[in-house]
Amino acid sequence: MKQEMNINAPPKGALPSWGRRIAFEQFFVELVPAGVRRLNVRLEGSFASISFAGDAGRSSLAGDRLRPYDRKPYEFIVVPPNFPLRGESEAAPEVLALVFEFEALKDEIAAALQMPADLLESRVVIGGPKTFTTTIAERIRKHILAGEGADDYLRSLCVVLIIEMMRLPARQRKSGRGTVLKEDVLNAVLNFIDANLDGDLSLEVLARLSGVLTHQFARAFKKRVGQSPHHYVLGRRIDAARNLLSSTNHPIAEIAYATGFSSQSHMTTTFKREIGATPAQVRNQSAD
Image 1 (cartoon, rainbow, N blue to C red):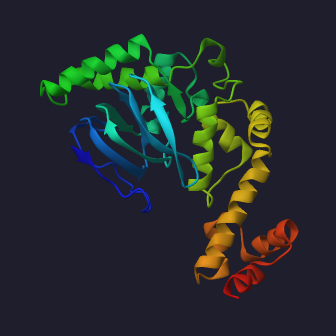
Image 2 (cartoon, rainbow, N blue to C red; image 1 turned 120 degrees about the vertical axis):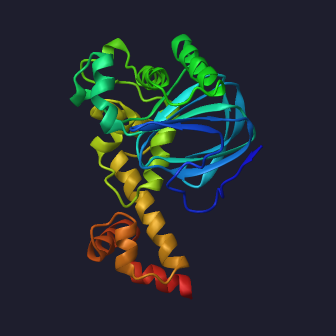
Image 3 (spheres, rainbow, N blue to C red; image 1 turned 90 degrees about the vertical axis):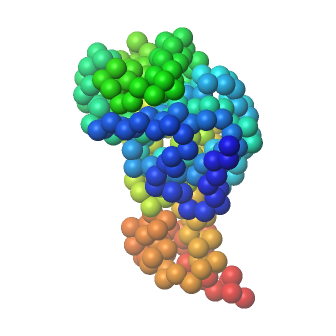
């Protein structure tokens, strides 16, 4: 079965219904069958998925690049709202996917995790396989395949699965934040940056997204990437703006806002300081 989306088009705001989907008030769960899969979405809700078999394909780890991945059976991922999900596989496995309203379920999840709700953040979690998440996912799968519909039992199973995917190690429960920035989480943060250049990409936002303490995130990011988070974000914004200046006729002010600068004058000042040319000069050079 082919599950196709245009990898090179702007991301869609909704997840296509490719399998057996069951909706509840605050989320839906879908059992997506195995097959050729190309995914390119950016959802308003939080997204979680767990695979029932191993998988190899390509996914976007940073920017427009698709890089190879090799996933084990029952690995899972949870990402916050507005997170870009982009990848392709010629033999994708059966997957259980959930799209949920994090804020609506936040108190319920925090209570189950025995932590204050204000410490529970919508963040990137990549983990597994774990025995309990595997067991719950299999029960949900059997329930859906049996055609038993949207009942309280299925809802409870789905919420438990989300809770277990988001469960923090004991050492993180007091602060809600860890001290280690894993490679796959870093790559997911880089992907988020490129997809949200016009948004808030402050150090605190990126650290919260990664689930790592702010000062630890800043230190680990610079060690791995070679630049501070601030300078990396600034560089990506400049690169994106230069590309738009060279390839489109959009007004300079519009390009400034689209790439995260507060105004045209802010972008001009930044360009002169960082690359020694104004946006107008960059556009003129590309026209020569």
